[in-house]
Image 1 (cartoon, rainbow, N blue to C red):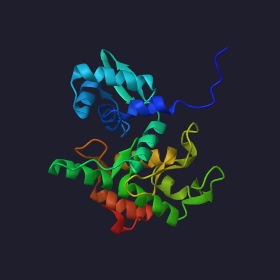
Image 2: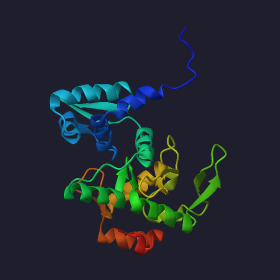
Image 3: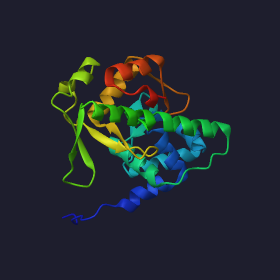
Length: 240
């Protein structure tokens, strides 16, 4: 009989994340996409011969999964929980030094608007969450499991997402409808869960968002500025 486990092996996962090149690999995938080893090697700043060892450690820690497409292998984060963990670690980590104009531009763009796996984060994501709460689409309820609030879709809160083309009755049941992440830049909540993912996907489909030149970075279009204010009541001053 296998020994009964009473604690999780946090050290094993932390060691896998804690090496700088592997941390860069995970952050490169934090926008929810899948990338080949060669692209991840470039993101991590290591050679193709070195990246295989790093990827093996991340797979062993169950932080990544690998997908086969013919002769090619693509890597992605194993679960949304991995992305959430990276977001929370970013809250307590010290900032990296900005040593070039390119690094400064990228850092500011990530703070403005980015993807946190499959949902919108940054100042834009927080502004959307705040607007949904102000308009009564979401409501905060006490969380019996901890000090933070739990958010729910209200009885009349289906109207705005449905008008936007998100059928709240057909969101995947395997995933919580409403979850939140504490945004590492804003220290406030942005919308995650099935609803957050569906709204973000719809924003891309409506050309409200476009991807930026940096991984994970997104930009709000003119149509998005108008649409977020008209549809969800996001104040114009909160839009980037």
